[in-house]
Length: 119
Image (cartoon, rainbow, N blue to C red; front, side, top):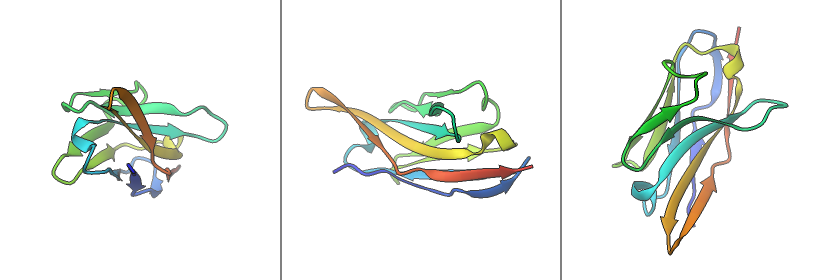
């Protein structure tokens, strides 16, 4: 069973930096696209950053230039480096893994990790 485990959430001051980690299953990591999503109270879940299995990346306009997604294939881990944090970045951050096996797409989510940015 594929599992994703986020870590690194916490309380950060505005303007500070923080890094989230997402550990994925070794059996599917190299063939997976990985995304970081977030959901603030009362708002819909939104895509923050995305990495294809080849390593191409894409970002939401709200985090471009501040956040960086990277993947370490040797550790089966994806990171989200967050710089110049703002109070509006406060949310539960989720890791998502999508991969194609046995002629169908699979889509897995982590349990989420809370990031709170204080002003």
